[in-house]
Every structure is written in C-alpha cells, then in structure tokens.
Length: 389
Image (cartoon, rainbow, N blue to C red; front, side, top):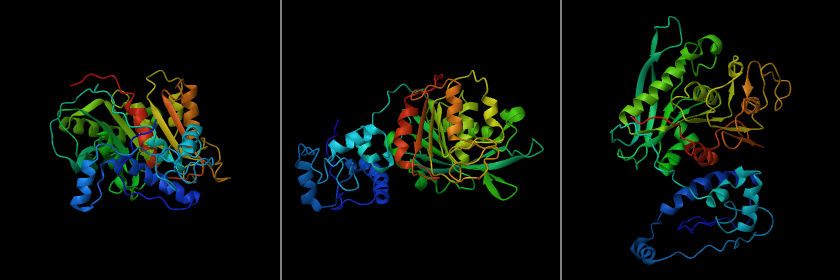
C-alpha cells in the first residue's frame, strides 16, 4: 500500500550509485521518510501560502523512476521514495539485502500506533529533553556492601504528556563505550520522538582495571541474581517509573556487543519487569547459556541482529569453538547470536512470534539504526501482562 506523497526537498542523483553509497542512502533515507512529512522548506511567505492552499497533494507515480522495471530497487538512493514500486515491492518481499533499501520498505509499511492498553506507573514529572541522573548501587567487588555511583542519561520526547503512559527503552552500550555518544550512534532519540517512548542510556560500571564494562564476566550459576548490573537496571526502571508515567507493560532492554549480552541476560533475569529485548552483535560468556537448560519460564520476546562479517563478535561462535569470519580465532567462553538463537529455538521459542533473527550479510560490528523501527514494532506489540500502579 502506497502512502501519500510528502512535501520534501530530497532530489535523487541522476544516475545509479554504488552499493556502498546505496547502503548509506538507505540508512539516511529511513530517517528521512519518517521526518520529511513534517518538514516545510523555507520558501518565503508566497511559498508557504501556496503550500497552505493545496487541498490535496498530487499522487506519486509508483513507477516514474528512470530505472523502474530493471529488477533492482532504486529507492531512495537513485529515485524518490514511491517511484520504483515494481522493483521495490518485490525486493522488500524477498527479505534479501534489506539494508540497501530499508527506507523503501518502511515507506510501504506505515507506522501504526499501538492501542492504548498501557499499564501506567502514574509518575507526573513534566520535563522533556535530556536529563542526566545517578544511582548508588552495589559495586560487584568484595565486600558485597561496597557501593558505587553509576550514571544514566534520560531522553524524554517533546510529545510526552504525563496524562498518557509511554513505553521505556533502556539502552546498553558496548564494551568501553560511554553513554553520551549513543543517541547519535543509535538514532534512538529520533525513534523515541516518532513512537513516543522514553529512552534511558545506561552507563557501565568503571572497573578497577580502567575500563567501562558490564558484569557479563560473572558466576551465573551460583550468584546470578546478585549481579550488580541487574540491580542497577532494576533500579533505573523503578526510578524512571516513579517520576514519569511509564507503561509498565512496555519496558524493553536493547544493547550492542557486550551491552547486547547484558540486555539479553537481563531481559530473561528480570522477566517480571522487562517485556522484551533486542540484541545487536551480541553474545554471552562464562557459562551463562548453560543456565538456560530446561527453561520453563516465560518466553520473553527477543529480537536478534548480527552481521555475518563481524570480526569483533563472531556470529557463529560457540564456547570452546573457533570463529568462522576469522578462521582460527578462538571463541573462548563466548556463545554468539547463531548459537543463542538456536538454543532458544530448541527451548521452544516460536520464530517470528516470540523470536526474530536478522542475520545480515556484508555487515560488520555495529548498531543498525535502519532496523530501529522493525525491532520496535515487534517488541511494542508484545507487552508484558502486569498490573498498573
């Protein structure tokens, strides 16, 4: 189904560009398609009047692209969105190389707001934008009474209204990555504005050996529930829900790399609070996967994204094995996405209903912002059944 055309200043290049540039345009285009409908060019009063006088925009010719019919989706890299339908509809349906034309697929899949079936927390704080906060939590070091101050950054979209509960997305960065670059890296502030959810960028603990790191290197068998990151994440959710009106049925954890590891673990360990999670370029280590044997608890909705060419976290790693992307590189104790997804399937997770896996060819170790809307749509449509406050 085609959406109405937008009033936008985007002009495609006159000739087809290469695949690498096309991938970049696809990423940028996915943000453009969601924002261009709200943009009005500064054309002077006459131009604004002309726009205001238009009762209805001219429909887009679905096949007016100069390259239409050549079997290649040329939106948005070489042609405006909505003008190469004969090729793009087929390309999107194939599910192949979606990173090259994700915006074209998003253009044909309009965003639908979930029903207002929220479980409000009742917070009435009004401030929007960025807000930096701290919490004092256990350190992870002996003695167990030792505490540390940990930071998190809150982003509240401009549309936030305390009268209506909104979802909460907690973002966990990769190893040694600070929280202050995450908004640009993930583009999740833009997604939050589009979908009306609050974002928290959670900081890793500064460890004694001089690095930010999640406590994935933990004794999961005997001390799993005492993990300091689980305490920290639970405290963040509680603190934000006290101040803001959070939909307690739509609290999600997402992360990249080692942050994905902790997001995955915490989504399962905090299943009474967390509705679902998204792991990008993720893994687990130190025997965590072994603790899942015989799982009988809730099948937490999970969305996995991983690049086949990832040389930092080999997609096919299994504890004790070697890496396929880097032949001969040992996996040590790491179980990466291929292994984790297969483990969940073996435990009964239903593919496409409780579990989605995007295994991306020609993609390395990074967050995939062009897929923000896809994982958000999957998770937000699967709320946790909890009681409102």
